[in-house]
Image 1: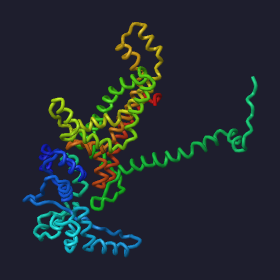
Image 2: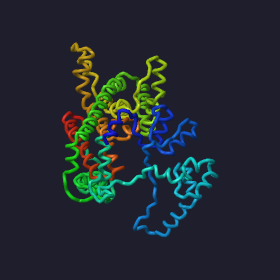
Image 3: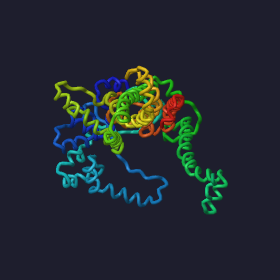
Image 4: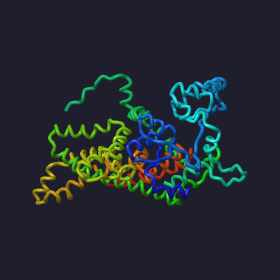
Length: 166
Length: 297
């Protein structure tokens, strides 16, 4: 927290929407920033010169998940949808459209068919070491993994962000 | 004197004419039900929720009564700072809009020819038809690095000014957004002042400034206060403008409510925070009533 608060004077804007970061890079309000592959590929598509790198400290990331409600009226339908959305072709379309890495490795070929070089660009064929360099998002809860309960739940992180950083 | 002729009426209308209470009940029930259900009920739910907590693991609301949310707000220097910043912003926007609106409304009400007046009314009301977001985004294009402001200043040889992502940008956009809400009540108040009172003041030897200060301003004050209710309360609750044109210190009451509902799923804390502008506005409205503002709306 104190590290983030110390960085604040160096920062122009904590962006809330991906479109804001794209706007800021294009207009010269930002020269360096944390972002998603989506912003990089959108800017590159607009012929904006930009590169992305993972710092030696690593990077954070998250995986979007499909959830099934316990009281869903048609759970079989939902399972069929999940099966469909996990197929390589659909995964490839989603990955290229949204700029995400697909879960299904077989999507790679289809991705290159839709957009040449997109498999590599979205790290669909990256080695395990690449994924190990990313700390995946995990909702913080009060009970830690080590059995202690002195960790900080999510709502408290948000209030700390509002009161100590911003 | 002749009695007014009895208009032959249907059975229902004559029945209602004989029972004024029934007429009033039928007229008032639908709007009153709407008001109680949608306005008061929502407010009561909000107030009650503010005394509850969330489960830190599931973020489900736990109906355990406590004052924790309120004590967090008032014991934390950061939240108190955010409240002061929000009220300060709302006050600054209100004063600026009043200062800009007064001469504008005066020109419209007393100097402009009817055609000019109509044109000015259109100019004031037209932005209200445009989308809020479109207006804020267009300000972003004005403030941005190399945007319209930089371009104009560059042409004038005045160098560059860094306004984007500062609270000055937030202030400017708020002043722009809410200005029509100040001009219209001030115009209504100025239009109502009889010309004879201004002439009487001049006949008694008062010059322009003295007439403005002692005659126009006191008579227009209810209009200014009525306008200030809009500018003040609209600034107090807005979070989108700070989010879009504000920088690292553009955290206002609305942003705290937004992030607690939209990100942390902490509805009880957001509800407690929402009580702050409600209390501020209640105090504000009571003082406005004392100044006679409600006669000018």
